Length: 335
Image (tube, rainbow, N blue to C red; front, side, top):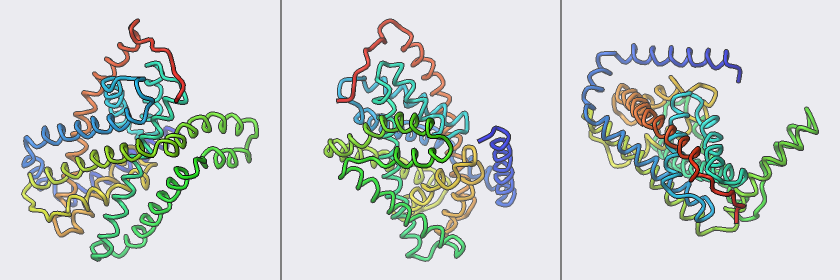
């Protein structure tokens, strides 16, 4: 996407965010943010734990004995810093993590394959949460009428996504490389061949992991579920700290309901404005003040910046480590 377009979308998102704050009431938002108080540190700690759990899941996606968990954790934090501070989401952060793995000595296909495996399985658990949460919201007639049809579409897409992943895991055959090749052949056959070759190498690692290692696949999915549970706890901490007494399922419904934001608003840098609007809508649909949802979104942005700031230091450490003589591990092929 051209930089000028991204800049315009970011400005539009900021305008939406400002409009939401003005409509909700700046004084109300400020009061709620003050009520969070030391909760910012608690939420930051919970999010740090979430990233550590994701690093664990990612580590288990790699060939055994190739890297230490500590190295994977450093790269995970570095990727978080890139994602938060550049407003590019996973489009830059995920390839950057693959690049850092290569610098740590992993073969290119193994490195980017491990990134793809973890991201896919994290997204798969997100899809399950979103499907359940939106289905419950629809069953309870809690969503506004204009959002019901899109919500049904999202649930259907999540089901189709799950079926596709299951088919790849059972058959051991990938579909991304052939589809990419078919689309690109319309413009350039030579370019399509190159893309299919590169994508195919990564997809073979991805599909091979899912097809050949079902026990490890189940283990990683369980770890990812634990990471998502920490995000649900984060929702409860923030909303409880501003005085809301939630029903048992409410934090799950908020967290699950917002899972589609990144996919639906991928074209908006950092989902600025879109994220805040969805949070406000979800919390309001559960019978709480929309200001509480907006506050939750803002707290999450602040904690993301806090953790990303720490990630910048981690990135420097990771880079320095790869430049040292002791960090020249010979690349290994995926076993």
